[in-house]
Length: 406
Ligand code: ADP
Image (cartoon, rainbow, N blue to C red; front, side, top):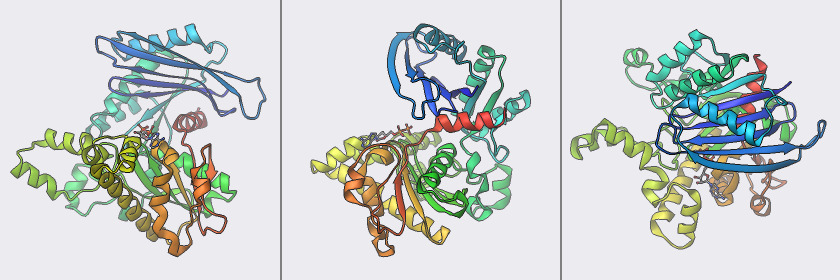
């Protein structure tokens, strides 16, 4: 009895995943998009897992998709149940023992997977001040899920939780202390579920105790962040008060002198919404190179496109700066891991990010780096640091954490 339904609810989307934790197998997954719009999209993938007891479950996936109007999150759960009924797997055969919810912001209050009581719902709602786009959407998913799955416990797993161990020196901004306290301004960090999962998987892969390792994890997806992990505890991370800080991302600027915003407000007539949109939606790889997709940037660079080349160079420059800073914060490093869409697939990014660390014996092996596959070592045998690619699995991690408290 280790099946967990994992829910990631956005403002107009619902992602779900049925996970068998014991077998580390995803039995089904789906994405319902454009909730509340005249025409919605439903995609459902059912997987057939080889017989019980198989060590590495063989998967046969069948994908189904259709278009239909979906009124709200409650209707989305009805649609999800219909997908399971029509395409499998049969929920009666694989009944979820709990529902795990990804919740973006847990503020300074939540640092563990938390069974969702009415009071926890109030707290998540109250934290919407800090995550106005995400927490209300997460809560809508929680409420609809509770109606659809009334008989099992629901657990919130927070994106910020893993970073609750940041020391004050790392999470405090050097601004007026009273104002910061009143408005709860500090660095929270995000992608915590992924950083935790990857750092633990990396420790298992190298066969050394998590407690003994100084690790750096680069989570490079559309959103991107890097975390320094000392003995399994997050001690520094690149995202801050919001996911805008830090690395260059698909559409976000990452680090920027805050005075640029003042200047643009005064000189270019941008208001707060305009600045928000500029820095979150029209910057990063998109703003510099015309696409938020690293594949396009790499293709553009290979074709000699100047804008794409600059976008790539800025991206890599920032990765190097963070690698250096985090090695200094940790006093050295034992394992460096890459994960998420760019980290798992873009060999050039991995090689270039670490190319200047040869002086301290970090050596990425070109042939290993070019290979594809699951969790793997890409450093040379004589490298002073283990460099790994570790595919992230946030759904499995949420499911595991959910099971741990029910
Ligand atoms: P999200 O943050 O949305 O979960 P992902 O982790 O799925 O994102 O990463 C998505 C990004 O990964 C894409 O926007 C693209 O830039 C990048 N990506 C995916 N496949 C490749 C590839 N083969 N080479 C380079 N980049 C890739």
